[in-house]
Image (cartoon, rainbow, N blue to C red; front, top):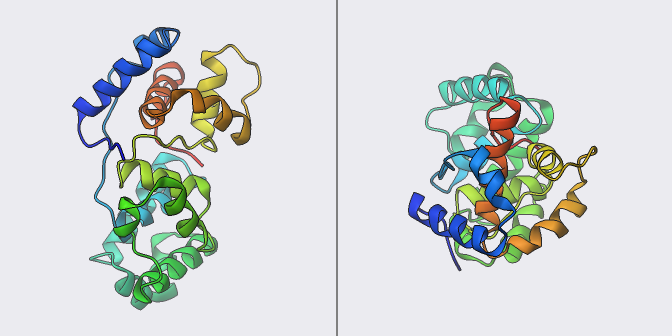
Length: 214
């Protein structure tokens, strides 16, 4: 199971992609250096992905700062102990409050091991994660990409990736997740590098931070 742990891994993956798909060279030139964006696996890392869903980067950063301020350290036990008052102060939506509560309960009950999942094949890990209500494919893929370091994950449901693909390939309408997932199969076994490439391209061409966006 190949992982992306260092910038050297990204460089290797990008070189392989450019050899196999020369058309990506123009995209890579515009994208510039690709960031590593690795985080330690565990509850806090998954919680940060949940917080970032369907909000702007500025909003996500603000909510995250408040969350780790009122619940410190951010563990499953402390999250549940904080209760609705702490969750409200942090600015979490009702849906995200409930999702993080279910994740916390699953971890405490030993039904969800976020560290063990990092060692499992991608499809198996995806199945386990999406069995928890509130964790969708995008959330699971982003966690496995940045926390587990899987090299062959492409979150095709990401709006920024869809826009970047459409812009790069001259399409007037961004693809849906199914269409982009099928297209991205050609970039295996380095789909995780391809995702970083298109996020960086999105940032370079649209003047926005290339944070994953559900």
